[in-house]
Image (cartoon, rainbow, N blue to C red; front, side):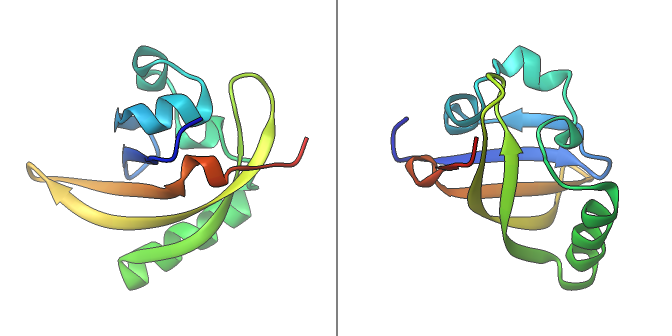
Length: 108
């Protein structure tokens, strides 16, 4: 997969606004497909778990955790990440940066 990190920028409801090549390689979606996805489409977290992470992000403005994600090909795995709240061009966004994508741990 390569060793770069995936960088994903989403709005406050999880819609992907921008992704880098690492995100494309990690999850298997094209940039065009990402434009139609929500973070909930690739996570294996429950709505309750997502709400907890979002509350922590709003409180601390950053989180450092392990994500359980489902790639386009259906493979589920984990990767460490940092999520940060930011403002770009007046829009509140969440910037997620993963550990190097070659640290993805396949679970299924």
